[in-house]
Image 1: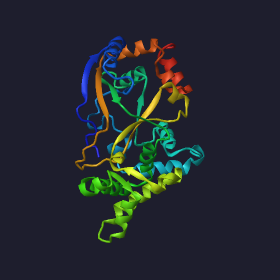
Image 2: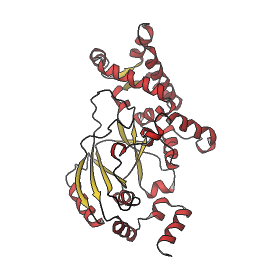
Image 3: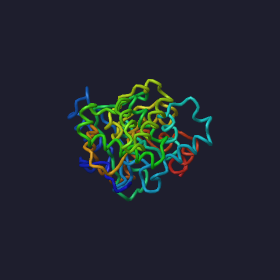
Image 4: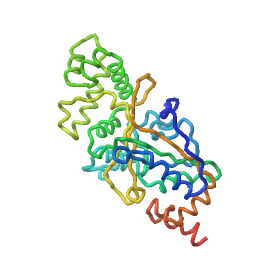
Length: 311
């Protein structure tokens, strides 16, 4: 999966060596967006992760094909932790505990992202990413729900659904007839034709069935096919103090594959290179951004005190 390049044409803005430089550059960037229609979010990574940059864990080499196994193992062993949660909230909670999911952490606070760009690999260049998008989904969005339910399918089932969707998009006649939407009528026509490859259709129906467990209105679905291949910024319900302190939200990713499908995710990505990390971390500490305030637990507070105030 790592051979798939998730992001094309990421634009470098500048190299920074202190907090003030970042603030000045962000002010310039803010002036060039339509604040009534566009939103900026941020992410920091402490080094150049090459083909796995800005990639959720389930798509990285060590976790490819294991999303379903992690998801159900965690649910099975800690059911009390996930009672009454929506599927998106389940993924959000799993993400909190470092479980591999199809979510990528973002923040609305640029200083938090800058901290993560500097907190590790101290002698390497860090990367501060800006995501510009016109659309932000809420926690109860239908699109966020259906993408979150992909975790209910194993890797072979996901591949079948991906191929089924891509075949539908490639069939110009059917794609235009159904206006790019997978509907009950279209699915019913496939299942009645014995000459069709049924597995992809069957697995798609399985996915819709998982969605209906949470939202019964999906019984009369009209799912935009390309939505299942896209990625979206989502504002989840705030479930813990760390998420609140980090002003966290997510990118949720749809199905990935190697088919040549033209998609407009509506997300532009820019980045700053960050050097002189130790100085940047000291400046962030003066502004109240440090390991203790980022992670909000006793162990990290104790480590912060050991390495700073009581060193």
